[in-house]
Length: 66
Image 1 (cartoon, rainbow, N blue to C red):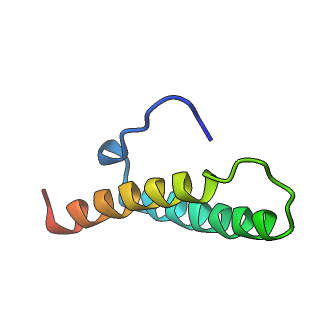
Image 2 (cartoon, rainbow, N blue to C red; image 1 turned 90 degrees about the vertical axis):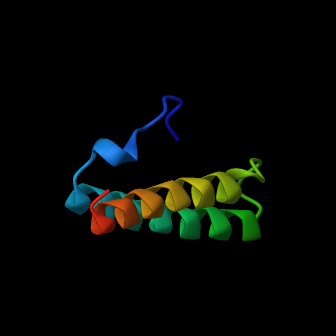
C-alpha cells in the first residue's frame, strides 16, 4: 500500500468505483494469503478494510452531493 495519504473526496465517482473494486480484490487476496500462511503482516486485511471504508464514505458523499 502507498505510504502517502490519498484524498478520495477529490476523485471522480467512476475512479472511486474502480478503486473500490481493486481494494476488495486486494482484501480477498490478503485473506487467502493469511489462510495459507504466506504473509507475515497480520494487520493487512484490517488496513485494507479501513481503506475500503474511506472509499465508500467518499462515494456516499458524492451520491448525496456534498
